[in-house]
Length: 212
Image (cartoon, rainbow, N blue to C red):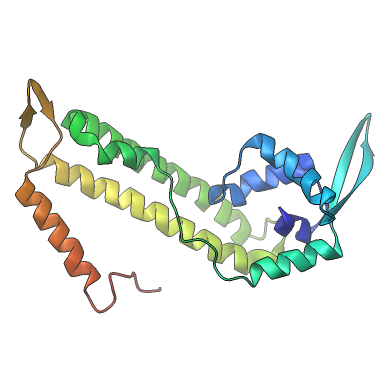
């Protein structure tokens, strides 16, 4: 929130919309918190607020203070922060997929592929606008592009992994547990897949994708 206020003053509504358009992709927050946070920053002296009349309505416009800029600089200098954590319910369903059928697993994997493709479409449209100069913060294009590049690569990986996983699961034989057919490959195939991961991570590049 301080980072956005450092760009320009905003109303709480504008801040919420800007968060949803940009930071929300990789730092989601509940809608209620988006409206509460500017007030908290103002109470801490990191932002100031003033009332502005818009037609018959009055809105509070928040602006970063000198103390807020100092706090933002200190935070930015404080290293990368906590390691990346991804909360992904569809992957949780894959992890426990052997509790249901291969058809159920296929539906989940196809959904992951579709979701990733949809997000890539949204990111692509946003990138096209910025590349064409249709943006409000030209001075921030390079840093915005750095952040979007990682988010694009993550969703490309999710999309491509889901395609691969569907093909992989299709090769698994039918397995019964009790009276139910479940999505479970053989232990031998599982060992092969883990060995392939070890080989890839043991490669000289550590399995890291080379920069374009």
